[in-house]
Structures are given as structure tokens and as C-alpha cells.
Length: 227
Image (tube, rainbow, N blue to C red; front, side, top):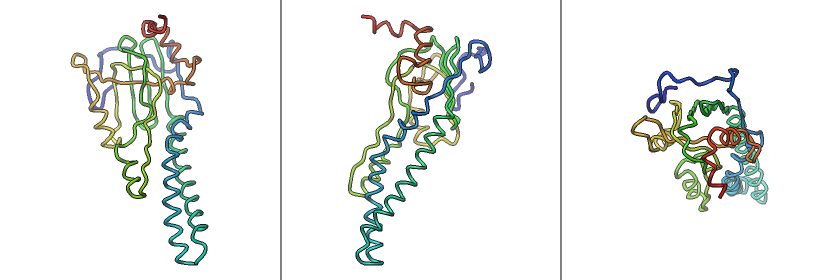
């Protein structure tokens, strides 16, 4: 795999592909869509308030007495459109994410063109990882326009962290490219510090197959649970 921001890992290495022995394909569960949508509910509420106020002014100017009703209608339509767009993007991201687990390691690909690849020996820990990064200042800018402050949290869950290869698509936003480029890099191998969440490969409970494969290939990562 050629990293758009760096080099390949170890040349001449073999990674099984889907359909070959030892390669298991895993995907997120459908309910994961709501994990990406729920953090934006406060922002949708802010959008409704803003559109309610603007719509009320317009409708009250056009016909006295219907300002609040018209503003509420405008707010509901705006929220419905924004929510539909948000759910559509989240569903596309979830259904397009694929995790391939093999005796070599773990690979992740999504519909945007992001790719991660991490070998089992290079996994350093099981811990908190980012499933979704938010653009710095976006929520604050919306808050300044409306007089309210809304914080959109970054989505986090448990997963694998370690050194691996990473491909960032050319169309990725500049702020995201800069944030990823600031991640640590192993000076010896050139590998990036990367992470793959358990949620990207199934339900977030003990039935998660990526978790099971991790316990099989790297049982040492779980010794701290055993006292």
C-alpha cells in the first residue's frame, strides 16, 4: 500500500485479500449510523432556532400574526433537510466501510478513499480511538451567529492503536490532512500512528469479531484485565 503522506511499510510483504484463505471481511452494524448522527442533534436544534427566528421575521413582515407559525415551518423544513443529508452521509460511510482481518494484520477501507493497514506485531495497545473528527471552530462559528454555543463532540470508541500504513485521499479537507500529518511517525520504519475501532468491524460488545481476532493474535494486549 502506498501512503499518500509517506512510504510503504515492509516491501515484499504479503497481505491476504478477501476470498483468500485466512482473510475475514467484517463490517459495521447498521445501527452504527446513529452513532454518527446523535452528536449533531444539538447543532440541528440550533439550526431550528436560527431558522425559526429568521422565518418569523420574514412571515411577520409579509402577514401580521403568522410570524411564529411560518418561522416554525421554515425551521422544521430546514432541520428535515439537514437531518436527511446527515443520515444519508452517515449511512454511506457505514455501509461502505470494510475491515479485512488476517493472520498478517488488520486493514480498513472506506468509501472516501481512506485506507489503514496495521500488522499484528505493530499493534501497541487496545484503547480509546477516534471514529470521527470534527472541524475545529465549526461549532463555535455557528454559535457566534446565533448567540448560542453548541459543541459537537468527536466520536470515540474502543479499538486498536499502533504503527501502520495510511492512505489519505487527495480530496480530503485540508484541515483533516494537516491534523493527520501531525500524528507521530516511527523514525525507523516510517509508519504512522494509526487506529482502527472495533465499531468499524461489528457491534461494540463481546461478540465483536475484530476483538476476538485481537485476543487470538495479541493476547498480551489484554493481560492487564487479568489482574
